[in-house]
Length: 202
Image (cartoon, rainbow, N blue to C red; front, side):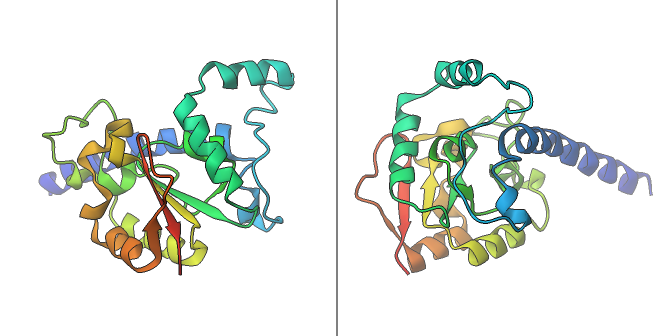
């Protein structure tokens, strides 16, 4: 019984570590963006991340511009130019800023993939540490159901360049995603930089 209680406490601690950043990012960055999930007409994100915190647009724009990665902005511009408001995007890795820079609706509830891989940044990010035991049970079933329903036009693989500790999580080592890419996607000709871009073909 005591062993079971310890195991339960361990799992609850892991879930708490995941839940805080997920709730924080969702509320601050994606609440206005995810309104289509609640029945509104699909639309592209207008870039207003903090309308209730920073009502003055000049201040918000300065905050956004101060942290712009030129390569990330280039990726966002490309994806935005190749999509319509009805399209969706899935990013494999720990880089939710791709959704912000591109303005494309997330194809899944997982705006970053740590619950799927078990990564807890700065805690078990060492490449030698096996994090599979920290993955949330059932998360892969939920992810694949989301992707089947939304059929994202693009999948961006950030493990290709090791962004956000994801060098140790190559996308092709995960059979469900590997099979999805083989069956319905092709590597885009503009693939460059720290990511690989897959475009849906069927």
